[in-house]
Image 1 (cartoon, helix red, strand yellow):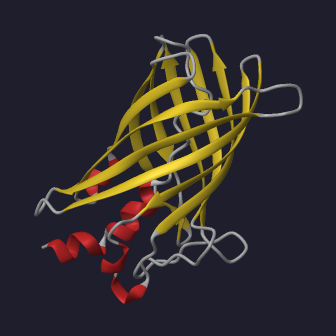
Image 2 (cartoon, one colour):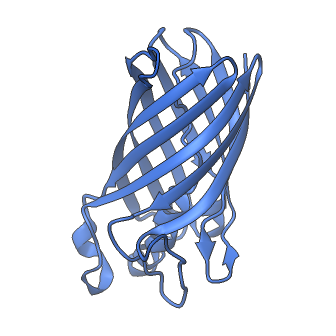
Image 3 (cartoon, rainbow, N blue to C red):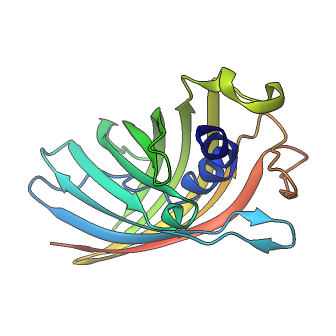
Length: 214
């Protein structure tokens, strides 16, 4: 039933956001990156491991396109796909960080009754790059066009997140580590579960990924 599908979307949206930011510094033109990611949002006294994979390609010197899938969502009864672009806005110069922005969307399709949801998203990244080392701070938000369908009036049009991370991009290899706070503007609620917060709001977790470049 569609009602059951919408009932688990709170968990799915929390889980889907729990992956490292795919690309912070656009790849070189023609370069490919293939990676796997794992998010670990805190729920109750443990973690909800979320496993995904993605591929990205530098389509120009300043723009990278990407697409991905979240395998863990399949266990919750949904096919989750994502796609988008990351583009350079300002280059790094001295103590001024480089700035990039992203835009794309996430989609969910129920494997039980084929109910469908679609979430546009956009974000901004600030980063310092020194050789193979990249430090970044990112802000991202989802747009939920069907927020009014949520139970108990707890839906919201925007679902923001903030994060800070480090990645090592060395030749053909990249490692990613990120601390992310989900929905820092409100308390999160999943039925029968407690989500530890940061300063009383949002959800939190540490996420990582590894990738190869070629």
